[in-house]
Length: 194
Image (cartoon, rainbow, N blue to C red; front, side, top):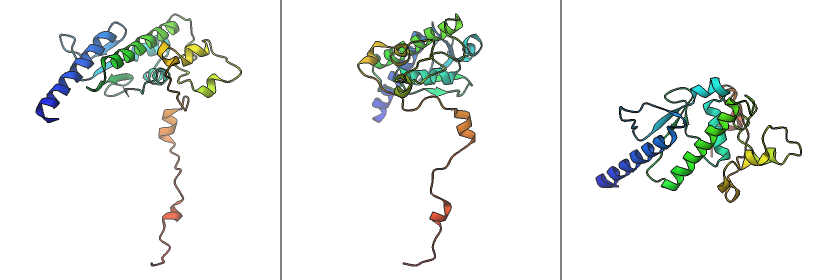
């Protein structure tokens, strides 16, 4: 890239992060901005207030983003129960806007829980991501429609990424590792020489 290319990429990353932070600030609290409300090449959204108001945690938003076709941003670092958003210089403005629109829509979904229109612990976010297997089951016992679950944005009807796996207990998986490797005996030297 050279000095000029690296400088240009840095400028674009800074501009992108600040553009997104400003667009999301009316909907989410943005942490660690300077006296002018500016951030560096990344910004942190504080999810902690939603735990009390709606029973929603960063993991719930991260999983719901999959329904919108996005991989989750960094979670809970450096502050627990936050999302760190770090747009790269290669993302187009259209993609930045699409992500911001998803986050704004998710904020509206959180508001439905805060207002009691959906219950804490059984709502669009806490049941996310919604796999195709869940959506095609004969019975549907959710307080929202299958369409709200699978197609929260219009563009998803034309181009949808389907999550392959639903909600997992991440903490359990981190503490109870399962090895699918061959048994150690398969690695032992048989003593034969070649």
